[in-house]
Amino acid sequence: MSELPMEAPAPRVGDPTVIVDSLHVEYRSFAGGKRADNKSSLLKRSRGTRVVHALKGVSFVAHRGESIGVIGHNGSGKSTLMRSIAGLTPAASGAVYAQSRPALLGVNAALMPALTGEKNVILGALALGLTPKEAAEKYQDIVDFSEIEEFIDLPMKTYSSGMGARLRFAIAMAREQQILLIDEALAVGDKGFRERSEERIRAMRDRAGTVFLVSHSMGSIRDTCNRVIWIDHGTIRMDGDPKEVIQAYRASK
Image (cartoon, rainbow, N blue to C red):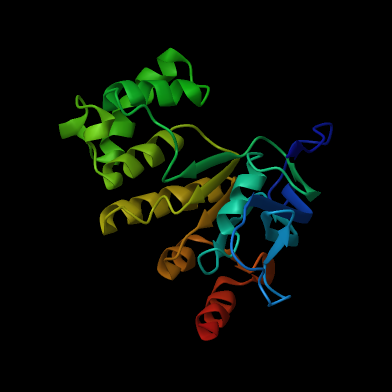
């Protein structure tokens, strides 16, 4: 992931923030058993390894003020795309350019299980680049939003997956992000939490941020995003208006 040149005038709504240019990503792992006969398969054998072509020539441009839903079946390449944009997964070929460093929020985002929720809130805020004073000022809002006040003094390892996901989201939204990548982080929250989270995402978009939301909830995608990208077997099947893309995606099942 490379950053776009910053010599240009002050950014405006509609300016490019992320450029994905013919992105290919491959994973390699040890392979056993017989070689697949289907030559069109995503899997191919090479010297005892199995190569998974997770993304195959993906290209698009994201702009300031967009919230982009990313949909597709399990294994289609959605999470790989998010990790590539965040700079965590290298490209086999092609490139990703970003106007600023993207922040990836996923349900597996690392917190410290042995530490209390209180300490994780402070450490998480500091890790985002907030000063100690700013972290202290944001503390109560993070706790209130995540709805874990009753458990804030307990170690993170005692939290349910939903509690941990709510806390991660609340921490991530404590700082204004120019480019935010959300990978299924809303899937484990209750209806009230999802609605508040979607409201925060829309507010960020309206302040001319760029949000990518990976979700299997078409309701969340439809209510939150003004553009949808459908990934299918590592390629972009469709990119455009949420209603049209979601309708086509549902019809394909």
